Each structure stands twice: as C-alpha cells, then as structure tokens.
Image (cartoon, rainbow, N blue to C red):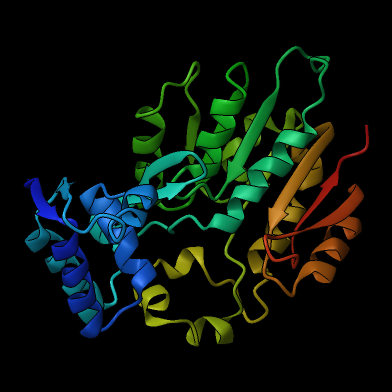
Length: 296
C-alpha cells in the first residue's frame, strides 16, 4: 500500500534532478509524480516559487523511485506500472494486454457527439457501438455523454473486455453498456440495422512500422491492438465491409486510422456504399479520422 510522505519543495526538486541524471524524460517523471504521488501541474509549478514549503505526496519517494527505476530498466509503460491512465476527463484503469488510450483518440469522442441529432430517432432509442473497445475509454465517454442511450462495446480479447468492464462498472452510468466478446460486427448481429452510430479505433499500424516502434510500445502494448497486416488496413477493411448492413438508415461509422491512410480509408467507405464520407484532422492537423453514413 502507498505510504504518504511530506517533503520540502527544495528536497523534491533535488530528488527530481537526481532521477533525471540517471536517465528518462522530465515529462514522464512529472507524470509519475502526479499519478503515483498526487502532485498535479499547479503544485509542480509552485515548487520553485517557495522552496521551503512542505509538499504532501500520496506515496513515498522510495515507492515512486522504484517505479521510475523499473520503467527505465524494463521500458514497461508507466501507465501499466501505476495502473492508471488519465484520458479526457477520466482516470482509466489500464494494465498489460490492454492498449493505453492516446490523447488523439479523445477527438473521436468529439466527432461522435456531433453526429447525434437534437431530435430523438424515430425508433425512440439512440443505439451506438464501440468496436475494439480495449480499455473501454470510448464506450465510457459516450455512455456518460448519452445517459439515455443504448451502448455496446465489443472486443475479441477477453483480457481487454475484462478491463473495459472494470472501467465501465466504476462509473456512475445511468444504463450499463453491454459487453460482447468477438470480432467486430459479428457479436452485434442481433443489433444489425439498428445502430445509429459506431466508433472504432482499430489496429492500423503496418507490420514494418510496428517493428520500428519504441520498445515501450512494441514490446509491452498488445500487438493485437496495434498492427494490422502489411499495409495496416486489414482491420479497417473488415469493419468497413460490414458497416452497411449493421448501421441503421442514416447511421454513422467513425474511424481512427494511421496518419497516412486517409485516402485509402475514404475509398473503402465509398466502395462499400456509405455516403457523406469525410476526413478529419488530429491535434496536429494530420488527417487521422474518417467517417461515412448509411443512406437514409
């Protein structure tokens, strides 16, 4: 169990510098201080303004230092070591076998929220699905935003689905999200033709690119959630191919993809009969999201 400690700001800054001399990035160590020690950004900014003041940490420096050392020596992601990942306005539980949510994927939630009409669907219920839910981040964000909706989360990994279940059950949801084990659309067969919106952040990294990723990602995050064939499009092809019969009339499919796949994904959407196909940029303006709608 974490042991709280109190230390002067000057001593904490000296400890931080000592750790960085041994290696690692300052931003990552600061993230660890916040997640494991409870020292948020405003508190860190005040350290140098008043070096003599006392700082309360929710864990001992020894515990934090051990996690930092383990990260540097093994390249295990800090999120796995701490068991948490801040994402959007949430703190998600994560662990080995589950993809760590990325900041860019937060934009997929914003795109999804823009697609729900202000009027109630004719069938009286807004149904949505998250394909390849992983930690459940997208499903949780949508369920919180649409408390009156019917949500479904799908993953082919029992480990990932269990993690999603943990995150979803810890949230104050008005209605539970239904979890489905299986590949893409197949577990949702009973819902085909009724889904008003579907989001997916599937594996999309080409095999050769995956081989060159940093060890902290390649050697520890699940390859099942990252790479998808020689060109990275295998999962995207499967999802787009099944979209038209699964979506409700007027229903949207929104996808995240690799930064250089926009043209191919838009072509896939059009080839499989979706309309109003369009692309959206990520936080750096690179086209990383695409979507299309089934005709009404």
